[in-house]
Length: 167
Image (cartoon, rainbow, N blue to C red; front, side, top):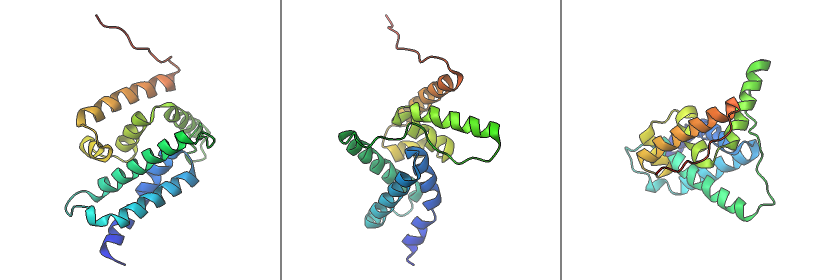
């Protein structure tokens, strides 16, 4: 096995977890990981040695995911699941909390959901998230703040606030 194969292979569990959280579907998540790995291996020569391989792989996954969303928007007959199916421990109360959180995450716009998952689930630093998503650091912080606020409102049952006019 080549060294690059081993380096990439060590990140597969995190890629699978993030893909599962993004797609909410095990089959689509596996497809997303496979597409990401295929692109990473074919483009490995573009990775800069010394840079963060994990962030590079997450950037590839983000781009592949966005491309798939665009393709799916052009083919609406293939609907995405309304709820994410995240495996949980058998405790009933915890299972209900996870189910509610999964449903709430599914209601967020993709740009908020991605930032929340990369920061909260994958524990990436804001700078790494900015690199992965190809957006400025301020945009990451803004999306995270707005996404968390929307998530809190959804989880508490508070209606979504509308934009206010400022004079």
